[in-house]
Image (cartoon, rainbow, N blue to C red; front, top):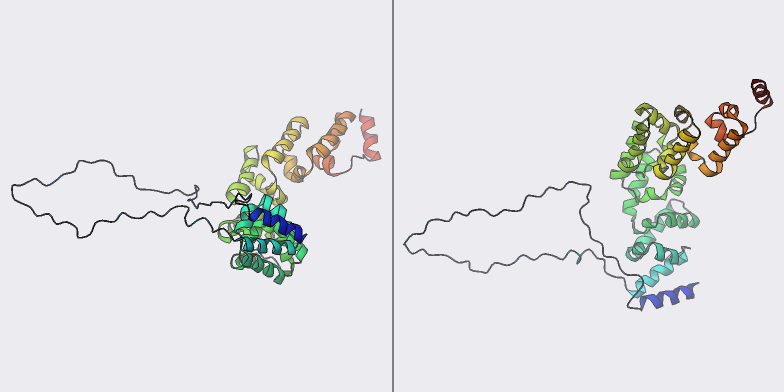
Length: 333
């Protein structure tokens, strides 16, 4: 494996037209903030002092004015390219800890190019000190390769936040990070803490059991889902109640999951929205493999069979009907 790796690296690092171009990153201001700039000066009528017939002495500057130098935007934002030996050493180290470096290069090239070997080693040492096994940190990095560009100084405050503010126990820390590695690259100030306050504010008990939601943006993910349920007819209290009952719903896509299942629930099944308040787990079942087949089975048996089942029984329980219920249906038909 190492010989193959060295051959791959030598072929690509010696070629001038390397398939791994170094990205040019420019740090422009975020569009989410409103920047206010003073308007450019407009042409104005200039009032010069009136001329006189007396000779005026005009003093000239002793030194010519220097044109201010405007630094190049890209000159100090583009990281210097690593040497061939540094790149090879980094790749060999990643390979030695069991990472699929070919997949990382193909799918996360900018991260691999900019991550420094000392930082990578320090991150691995930090994870090891927290009792993560080699298999676990390989999984963590494969799920969130941005961790390779982190440092212990950025990860340590996140771990402290999880333990102190989110009330995660030390014994559960590994489970929390293994479940949601992206927590380790989320800002405490701009993401983790606002999400924690939001979840507490809607009455979610024991947020430490749902720490995977802390890496979600309040503005773009958590709040819009509650607003969507209000838009389709739920009151604010009922919408919040749905997410308290089933917090995993925050992670479901509105377009690809919630909307098609809701449309089938209302249009095809003819069910009442209040059933979703009692059983929001409906959205966790497959529309094609679970919901539709079971509903069609009841449709074929007749309207009374549909009335017999709540949405919970329809998708969550077996379709077998007890002898007493089937006897009652026969007498009613």
